Structures are given as C-alpha cells and as structure tokens.
Image 1: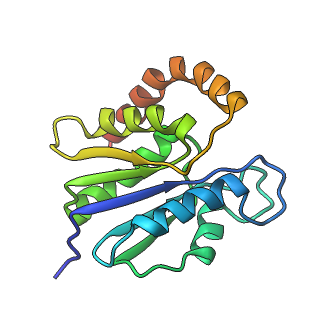
Image 2: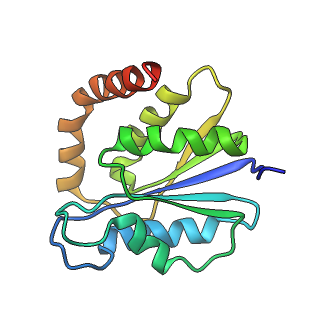
Image 3: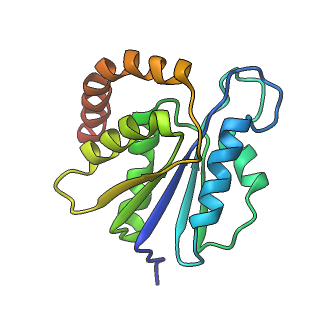
Length: 165
C-alpha cells in the first residue's frame, strides 16, 4: 500500500552562496517553522541546491537538522528556483494524494512562492498556503520585486518540459 497524506509541507531552502557548509540563519528559521507545524501524518519536502557546487545542498543540510516525526521526509537537492521547487514537489503532491500544500519560506518570499505553487497546481483542487518565520528584510523584499516579472516565463518553461515527457 502506498503512502497517503492530506498535507505536504515544502520547506524552501535559502543560501547566500558563502559555501560554509552549514544552514544559513534564514534557512534555519524556515526549518524551525516547518518543525513546529509538522505532524506525524504529514509528508515534508526539503528543497534546495548547492549554490556554489562545492558545499552540500541546502536540502541535505536541512535533513541533517530535522528533528520532528513525520510520515515521510523527502530531500530535493536539485531545485534551483522557486518554480523549480514547486515543479519538483508536484510529484510528491500527486504521489501521496495531498489536498493541501504548505510552502514554508520567508515572509518577503511567501506571496511569489504561493503564486508559483498555485499556478502549477491550478485545476487540481489542491489548496496552497504558506507559513513564515517572523521578521523580514527590506533588501530581500526589494529583490523579490525584481523577480516577479520572471515568474510567468519560469512557469511556462517548467510546464513545457513537463508536457513534453
């Protein structure tokens, strides 16, 4: 019998590219939020790559630090963008039959992350919400503004790759 879970929690990694081989404080705060909301019946996806190619992927660092009991812990070290995080998580959403996805990310990133997940999950009936640690960053919020125009092209590219398989 395959695993079933109503809720999939996706924790988005974060790194500044310094390559120190440990969780960035922003990523650690996201992980703490995920740990606080996760239940033993949830599937948790830890998503993030190695920005510099020399250090361990964010997803693996988060898995090492994870300390909560869940139905399954999935490590995705390949996602490089917010849309990539969402696209890679789709397989897990459908595999476990999730009815809800909770995207755990920083408050300044939450809206764009929710839109990316909702866009890829439209017509499926899967609900998407986000959870974030307190605090924010003006610099990060301003950076987010520059990334919004890229979102439609990123989604289109991911959908095109998915449909051609």
